[in-house]
Image (cartoon, rainbow, N blue to C red; front, side):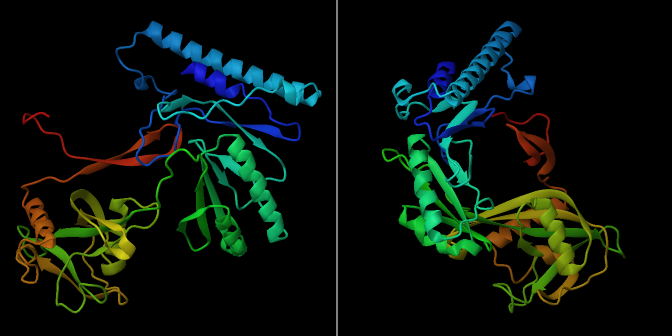
Amino acid sequence: MLSGVSARSSSSLKSLPFKTISRRSSSFLASSSSKNSSSFSLCSSSSSCWNNNWDEQRRTTFTSSISKEVERIRSRAKASDISSSSGTTSRTEEKTPPPAQTKKDLFRFNYEHDIRETETMLPFNADKYGGVVVNSDEYDYKTDEEFTLALDESLESWKESNIRGCWVKVPIANASYVPIVVSRGFHFHHAEKEYVMLTKWLPENEENKLPAAATHHVGIGAFVTRINPTDENKRDVLMVQELRGPAAGRDLWKLPTGLLDVGEDVPEAAVREVMEETGVKAEFVSILSARHSHGTHFGRSDMFFVVALRALSDELIRCPKEIEKVEWKDLEFFANNPKVQEGTAMWALNKKCYEFAQGKMTGMQSDFYPAGMNRPKPVRVYFGEEKSGGSKL
């Protein structure tokens, strides 16, 4: 693995007008950006990342070899820069670039990602998969011709540097660039209100491994309960009738539902939707069940989570734009809703809610953990409750 670093990092500048920018990546990186490919990482900040079967001597030896290799790479890069600035480097002294990696080369150990760059190229960042992402916020071309020249020069350099996937983000203010990018073999990936993203896979002898755009919508249904104010042995369920949507106009009492916002966790989405639609303040208890369907809006798939919440307030404030009626209903009414057909997906999800309210099942809890692999934000992990005894996998 370490010898692979030497081969890749020893590639010299290909021509004097260019400068080399080291794009640092301090982890094991997959050789292709693949939604299906495996990934492998070395956590350098936690001893728990090491296999317990490795003894301290092997651990120290391995760490030392990595440090020496990184230092050797840095020294070589520094020497190359000094040589270039003094004018001692010539094209005849340059080494032949390494051949394209084969499919068997699944991983590479890459601290220094060297990509040739000039001031007239599109501004970009190297990603962690051997690709580049153009920084649309940093370019300001006077004419479409200037952008075209920069794009063509960039593509030539990226091909020579064995770049794999290219991502070009075109803001709506520069929409005239879109047909130019498309004419260079790029394809639409996804679009937002402010921009469109286009991609191109450069290796001609490899399958395109760039991931597809988002494939799923994610929604929630909130099973909110409270203790009945007049009988503490009974439980009430918060239910609504919708003003719009497929459930509207059916006299159907159902759970409050909604879609997740970008960057929002499932529990927070459930709490938010309940407050927006009914005015009830609630807190997360557990995730009870999920439904997975396909062929929904624009051919996308749908994930729907049923979330148990505990009511912290009783007052009902109906959202007039979305909800026709909102009431606290008896748990038995919820379990025997005449409008829900037995054997359907809604019937199955409601059945699990009823069993949860009776204490016959537990849902999934959650907690936050560091994401690892140098990702800064924590992630939320969902898991079932521990139990003693039972069968083992």
